[in-house]
Amino acid sequence: MSAYTTTLLGLAMAVIAVVNALLMAWLWQFPMKPDPGGRDPHGVSTAPRSWTNVHRALGYIFVLIYVALLFEMVPRMWEFRVISSVTVIHAILGALVGVLLVVKIAIIRNFQRFGGHLPWIGGTLAVTAVVMNGVAIVPAWRVLRPISPLAPELAAGREVVAAKCFQCHGASTILSEDRRRWDRITKKMQRFAERTPGKTRISEEERTLAAAYLTSVLGGREGGRGRGGRRPRDAEEQRENEEADAPDADDERDEGGQRRRRRRGGRDRDRG
Image (cartoon, rainbow, N blue to C red; front, side, top):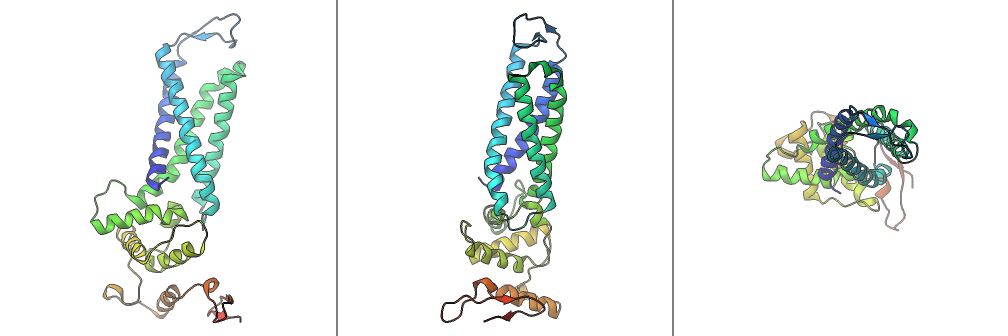
């Protein structure tokens, strides 16, 4: 499932939550008529059956979207290279949505005597769903700009970011990166994808397109050595660019095929 799809599903989920909460508030204004022997001790609602069915159908769609996103996002979270505070909040709110759904369904199916609490549960569910999706959709929208017209090269870079960068990061993590150094950051991510099982590799052309897109949309400058006629501002940035071009310590091997490790601290040193 692409980043675009998850973003649109999250947006649909938030809209459905709000609409269903408002619809429930309206339907609960209709009085209950007695129903001796029925499963609900409060009786049966006199609300229009057609709108009751609409409310129920929207509830089913909400649950289906939630389950689809759950199966998509939970495995991805365990594979994220960096988990931001926004990602943690999103996960906690997602779990809370699940708890509220279970409670609501349990009351409707088996514990009708607690039916008077359903409007409060439905309202809380709607607010939680909106906040949960908002903390994920807003950063994703800022990174992907899905409806913004772009030059062909930048549009291609956006597709790379959506398909490749989001496999290891949430949008909030991308936004928190140092925007002056997209070239160096994308090189590191390229190597990480290459050596991590299950990750889709990033070609050099794709990496260049992603760096150009992120620089254009989020700001910053390309940090390659001499790229675009620019030179690093100081010795520290020069050193960082050289490290970005060099292979990671975990990927270095000597002539005998043995892995060499190095420790970081000021300068990198080989440890045999």
